[in-house]
Length: 224
Image 1 (cartoon, rainbow, N blue to C red):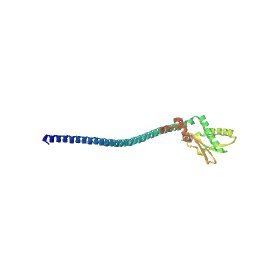
Image 2: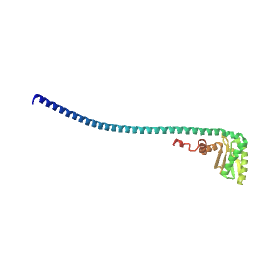
Image 3: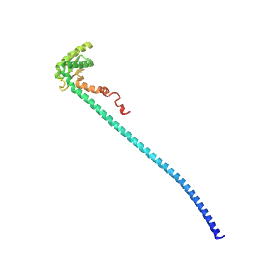
Image 4: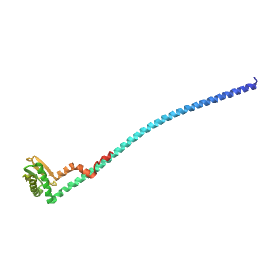
């Protein structure tokens, strides 16, 4: 073969090798791109799953924190409201206590009150002889109330009962008023002093007072 023919063959071989190399390189590039895409998709999925897990975790933490905060605020609000209500009730009973002594200023009205307090004790004891304890300052009005109570008791019960004012054991003068009815040979005492009646009212009537002031199911809204 001549030099020109050899050169031509070498050129053809070179072009063939180059073409093969280019095709091989292209094939490698395509495969590399496919592997890259697969790996990229895998990494994206893994990272997305990780982000979703982290987001869900933080969302649950935020939700729990929000619930705790809401519950704490609701409890604090409820306690403040209950405290304010109790302060109002305490204030009402304090004012009522301050007004107890005013009842004794009107003698005729006070006599009626004492009569009813005595009658209540008489009906409860249903005895022939009963002691009445009152303040020394109330001696006159208490005796009148006792006479009226005795008459009404006889009228209503058709029975006689003897009332005696226990002057040896008078009630303390610092009490607002009222009486103590003693029966059962001195073993039974019915405390119908103003202070005791107010205390009983505060204990027994408090639910009704709350309902009148604040309505029924007043605490339900804190839990709804």
